[in-house]
Length: 68
Image 1 (cartoon, rainbow, N blue to C red):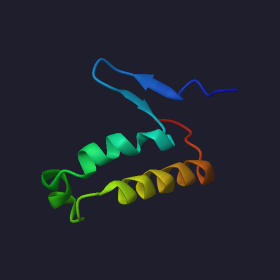
Image 2 (cartoon, rainbow, N blue to C red):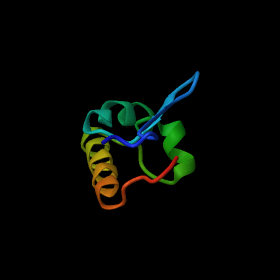
Image 3 (cartoon, rainbow, N blue to C red):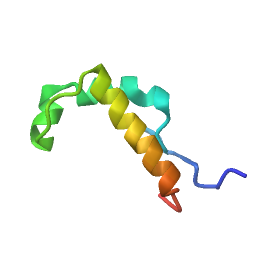
């Protein structure tokens, strides 16, 4: 059964857990030097974006969301 909070739509975005295909969106913002600078990390390239999303998905398996 899918929990009732699996997806929370808002007028501007949808809150949900990561899925592996999100790497392209992560590359979009994570590859921007202006975004990476205040985060004190190097901008993501494709392998880094894929690895980040893989870590997030693995974390969601280990620690399932109880609420947003």
